[in-house]
Image 1 (spheres, rainbow, N blue to C red):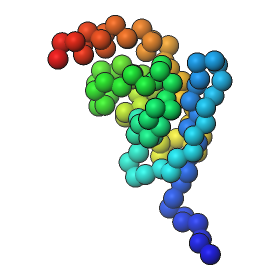
Image 2: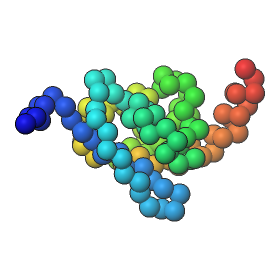
Image 3: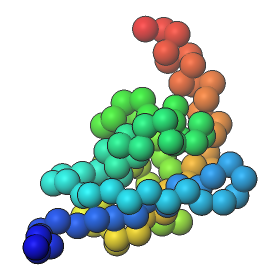
Image 4: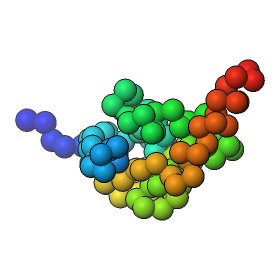
Length: 109
């Protein structure tokens, strides 16, 4: 019989769907995991409103700003260890307006 490991924590990532519903995913937390790392594990399961929202991965550009548990946050610098076992993520109010900037930045490289 396998005993549960006390240092392993599972978390539920609840992602806002385009139809105002929620998609829930269960993940195993890894050491130093950020919300961005958790989102990246979901890959193609991310809704389009979140899938293209991550540019710098360092918290510098703020284009990845989302709502984390109802509060504005930057997923690349927010650690899941600082949050509860259920994390709600939704597009930020201003993040949807950054599409043009992201396209300009991508075109310039």
